[in-house]
Length: 397
Image (tube, rainbow, N blue to C red):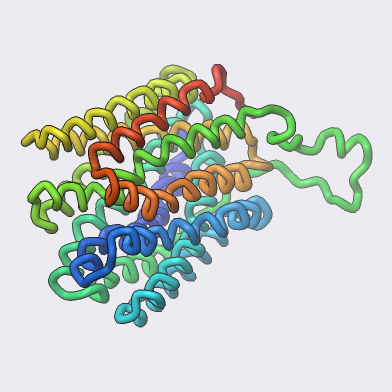
């Protein structure tokens, strides 16, 4: 089946929109060295870094419900406009860590709109046999956003202060607000039955709540919660780990950015693999085993101080981000078009709840046990996820 040209345009806008939002919410984690150098304890800096993910958790399901009701274009463009405003608030609050944290909390709340709606645009416009590849490309948005943040935020903050690091997020969010408002077209969706005219016959034909019909979605959500911890451990503390090994902050930032870019390419390859295999959960199982392995290797690298730390971080980052597109596509297909907004919002909520705990939690763990033991403990979580991965896929197609 030929994919319409419009579908690729929607994918491009969706990727760009979420990458811009990710750039904003990734900035606090990359400000940790700057904040610690100014006297902030590492655990407190980790809490500051978690502010955007806490904001995401608070609003993801609500944004998903709004998307189910009003469509993707309004949610993405409107959410980006609000995110632009929060970046302005962060710029104005740069001299006050508390107010700056509140601004980033608000940025997380508003940027959740692109998380909830951009994936639904992709699922709505692409046929099932191309959906894994398309969602893999869409899932590039997060590592691309982190890459942009990693190669700009630490250097600008160290050289010119926090406000200089916020210029690019403001420009990108403002420009993409306009582009998405003009360019995004909501995908076709099933006609809604008027509530006032609901009869026993139409009620029987109404979409079934997928959370009540089986435990599939709950299991995928649980798997994703466990697998997101290694991912955010590396994206939040990879920079700090490298600096502790003797790297300069700019060089470490460039390596973290490169690792995120490699991870973005990996998501595309894994998505294409799932299309070819005709399964999302089979590759997801392989990724879980691989994530446990690479985190164990990272623990060994820290203990041994191997010279090839950069190579291992690149590999580990690529592997630990590979599950997102698989799980996201699986959730959207199992939920169906009438429930996908809420299901994807729930999926992201669980992930960001875990991610919001990574900043202060892993920060405190590293401060107590060191990186090697912390990486080793994180490696256990993908193994716990393995038996929860469903044996077969579910889809409304």
